[in-house]
Amino acid sequence: MDRLFLDANVLFSAAYRKDAGVRRLWGLPEVELVASSYAVEEARRNLSTPEQRAGLDELLATVRISDRLADPAAHPETMASGLPENDLPILRAAVAAGCTHLVTGDRQHFGHLFGRRVAGLRVLRPADYLAPGERTCQREAVE
Image (tube, rainbow, N blue to C red; front, top):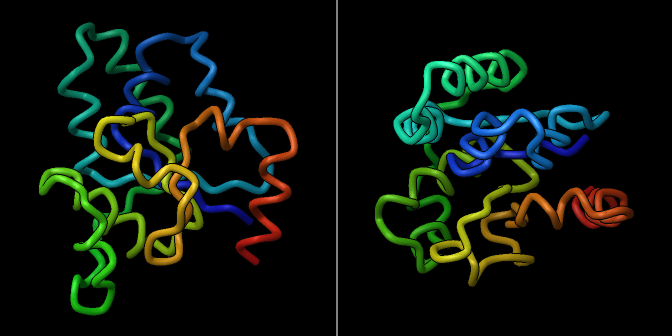
């Protein structure tokens, strides 16, 4: 089973519009969705209406919240990932949660990691994970 860590921008996009394509992540079989309070609060802070925040709460009902952070000494590649300081908690939480994938649309900060593995997890844009045939290939590569 794939375990996807959702970055704040993925949560934001899914809550911002009920017809957002990224919402398809919530309907995938054999996938566990994970996020951290850090990512949730960033998404919530950027949503502008009560309806959007309520939509986020609905989506979070099926997302496991994990706030543990991977120890940088045990996973030095997280610190050497080239991420800004404020994005390191996302990567470290994804590693600590035992996720197989970090799903983010943040091209500016995570773009150099797209398609690569960092500390055992694959960093992908939502569209790349949702592409036909991609999940099977990725699952085989991870397992």
